[in-house]
Image 1 (cartoon, rainbow, N blue to C red):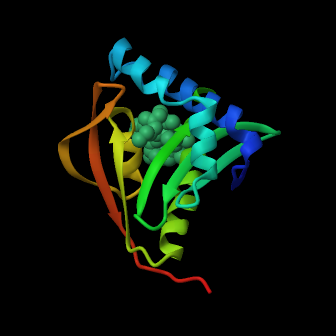
Image 2: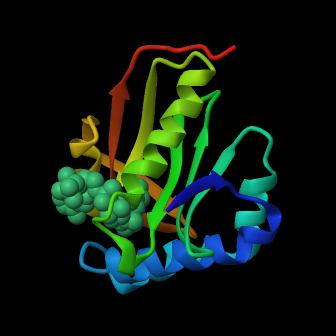
Image 3: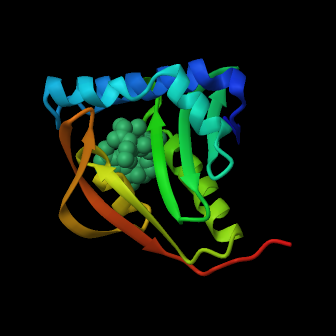
Length: 162
Ligand SMILES: CC(C)(COP(=O)(O)OP(=O)(O)OC[C@H]1O[C@@H](n2cnc3c(N)ncnc32)[C@H](O)[C@@H]1OP(=O)(O)O)[C@@H](O)C(=O)NCCC(=O)NCCS
């Protein structure tokens, strides 16, 4: 598996992984209406906007030329914004490797903690990666539909790379 920065030509593949991950992995925790609203925000164009946004860093995981995971962070804001792994590739270290890369980006800008809104599905994963819950009543509004999530954070020592 290789982790590398996403390029504009990867947007179709990263959007596809994003959609499949939500549909196949999160359906046990969210209604069909919530899943549909969530997926509506995962078009190729929305991924192009992520990849082209100079405030964000978008990374992907690939294996044998196929995209198997995508992660996005805002180093300046110290947030992990997106983290999704292809359903057939879970529990193989892909999410952990992407998250580590995103955390390094935040640390490289002097950030001493990472914040995120975890889906209900991925709270155990983030706990295992050292994140603590900041409250259980967080909500994200997508396309007018409320998606319950969990606000989490992880403290780390600031490291500056010259
Ligand atoms: C959450 C997600 C990114 C984790 O990716 P992953 O590649 O499966 O995770 P990893 O294999 O790197 O897991 C690392 C460790 O986290 C923990 N972990 C991961 N998934 C877990 C789960 N579902 N339940 C409990 N612990 C979990 C385990 O300790 C695991 O180590 P182990 O497999 O050796 O026990 C992935 O499952 C996913 O895309 N989920 C659906 C989409 C989603 O909700 N994304 C987050 C949006 S905020």
